[in-house]
Structure formats: C-alpha cells, structure tokens
Image (cartoon, rainbow, N blue to C red):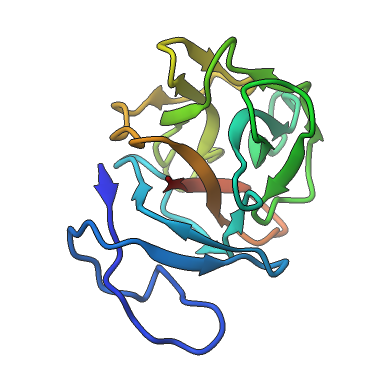
Length: 208
C-alpha cells in the first residue's frame, strides 16, 4: 500500500515510526541521515515485513535523481546448525536519467554481515514499486532470517529481482509511485549473540 504522512513540525529528524498517517496529496520533506533534504509525495510499504528491530533513518537520492538500480547486502548460506541472516542491506543507485551515468548511491542503515551484490538495473525507466521476500518467524527452535530478497517494477514495465536468498515468500506488490522511488528507510535488528535476522523490512519514498 502507499502511506502518505501527516504534516508535522518536529525538530530535526521526523520519526515515521511515531508519526500518525493520513491519506493526502500534500507533499512532505524528509531529511536523510547525511543531510539531503528532499520533498516526497508518498511512501510505499508491503504487509509482510519481519517483526524484529527498529526503523532507522531514511536516506534520499539527491534532488532531481531517482532510483534506476539497486544492490543488496546478502550473507551467504551458513550451513546446518549455523545462524543465517540472509538480507542485511539495500542500496539504491540514483540517476538523473535512466542510465548508469552520474550515479549517486544511497542506503539506509545496513547490518554488518554479508557482502554487496552486483547492481541490478532497470532496462529502461526507474524503480516505481516493490515486493519483499520474507521468511515468517520460525519459532523458538528455528533459525529466523526475516527479509531475504526484493524485486522491483520499473516505470517502463519490466520487473527486476535482487540477488538475495530464497527463504520465505514474496509479498503482494506495493502501490506504484506516480514518477519514481527517490529514497528508502530500513527496519534493522541489532546484532545479537544468537539468531540474528539483519534486515526485516523496508519502505520507499516516492518523489515527483
């Protein structure tokens, strides 16, 4: 679904996890962790995100840039009786045009484990909607991994899938940006001694 935020005057960073939401066409501004302020139109979410961790600070593409591709931070399979975390980070590759020229990379907070995959690009156009692959909770004796992979729809109609892991199921598709995705915010579980899950959920900002 698409969630659109209620206007609120909050000093510094506005925590979306604590802010009430209404459906509205009013554009809102968000300042990323690194100081990029960008006006956004709406927020894309899916219903199956993992339950662990906290929402981190958002990160926005520079003004006039949109997400043309993405990379994932993925931990390889650890084998029997070892702790798997699967997806640990998402990085957007932003461009002013639908090409790999003048790329600006942005990412919300990522987990320590895993390594970055090679980028996946829209053949044409920009990222406009997403579906998240999430493993449901495995119970007290199981190994939880939460988010495993992600796929996007491109504005020209193509679908592109990340190079993540295969546990769990994909959600239904989110709503679609009217123009394109321009930022993201991740829900990340802090590293623990046992049964880490890494990235649990993500939401994406739509700009015009």
